[in-house]
Image (cartoon, rainbow, N blue to C red; front, side, top):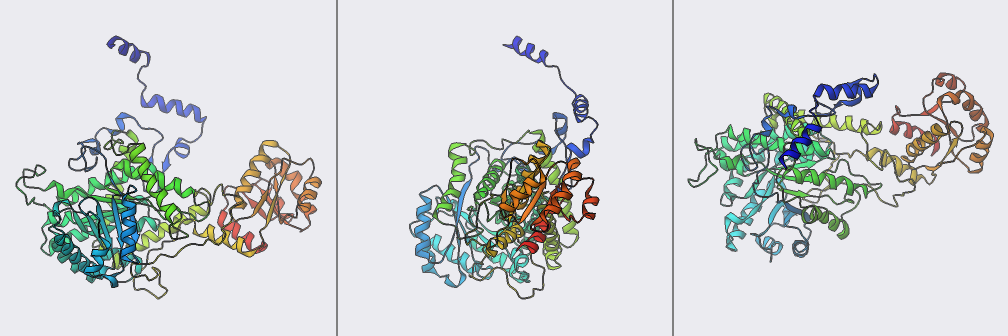
Length: 634
């Protein structure tokens, strides 16, 4: 066997990095290597087209094992089990309890209750948690920020009443005034003073966290990955600092903080984000010198450092920013890859947003599908068996280090600005995220960022049939977005597809669905390619598209277009042939329909001089172009 191995390796001599690059340059045939193959990310660093072993030499992310400080490889040693969470908006505690018991029998082992603060009392909690074994699952609660302390006391009393083992209770309260400030635009920082009493109330329950860092709010507002992570670290540090300044031991304070992250569709970058997050947070907590209160703990440093306190507790939630109303089942593809990246990265719990959440209250079917998306990864794909399978990947290790570097820069910058709270009070954070939101909407409008089914490859015949985007409501039952002027800048949570959806709904509700006829002529390959491009382009506005195999003459094509009662005629041919076909076709249509040339030919100026004004091509702003067409056609 050894001899065979030696022979095998001798048949494949080592190849140097320079030899790989030389081969690539030869295949590029003079094209620019940087422009063609190097990815310039929104995170501020470049991604190379290939990585080799030499690229991970010296990276700190490759040091250590799973379950050991700084936890880049995860908090768990033996397996990668995570909690499957489903949230329930509680309108009636008895009905919510019935639903909770039902879904616990269908694979869920983490519940999230969204409670109206006005309903809180002892009997309410008893009814809500009736027959639920609180030691067997994870329990999470959210209510209005001013009532979290009241909720904590009610829960503590209930757990004691039921004689539960405090060490077996796992879960969280969603106390996060900073998140509310960014969402509502109002200064609620005075509530942070409640954090100490909240922590002390739940101190007897070591696995029950009560201070949240809702970085998923940034994700849902369109933040870039380094922004979500960088601000989350400063956010967590703000609460940690406030608690320790108030006299709470650093170890206890850190163990009460929970991070709620969003998950974007950037698969490998998200895996790297969670790995980087644990590593950076572990080092931040260690800087507070958290002393372990136990003498029998095996995870304590020689100096008494409590390494358990350095573990970042992470709940991950699939993004809402990239979800769509049209072709909504594509949301299943997005949320599935997002869930995979979070699971591979070793988060503690995951919520999959049901595919229909953007336009209706999720029903039993969509909630079941959302649960099953995680169950498939666990029970059939066995993602829960292997800890940090991404470790050692040249690509992911480099991504982890690069994201960590950029996020740390933002963390330091935010700290220099006075910390997260001060940066929110001066609206620096919200402004930065909203600028990213604008940039991403611009990228979507130009197809630099693709939303399948929305700005690329839409379902040509889909109708909304009464569907419209939902507005979020808060735990009090009030609408999340108020019209009154706010003292602070609010996060803009418009989804990436929002403007395209408005456009398409406008078309559908007008009752005048335009017909776009492809006048295909000339070069076979070019006319087919441009017809396909044009069909996809115009269908993004909900137009009816009529493709054709090709016409022998312009007259034949125009006659067919008029017979089809086309509102738009799109000339599809090659650049060279447009000089011959475009003007005769434009003159033949005689204003009976909008005339469009598919492409940006060299003779464009001459065609414009002849009266042709509409051209669609890859450099177009698709959204703005379609808005202009709607103004003329509807």
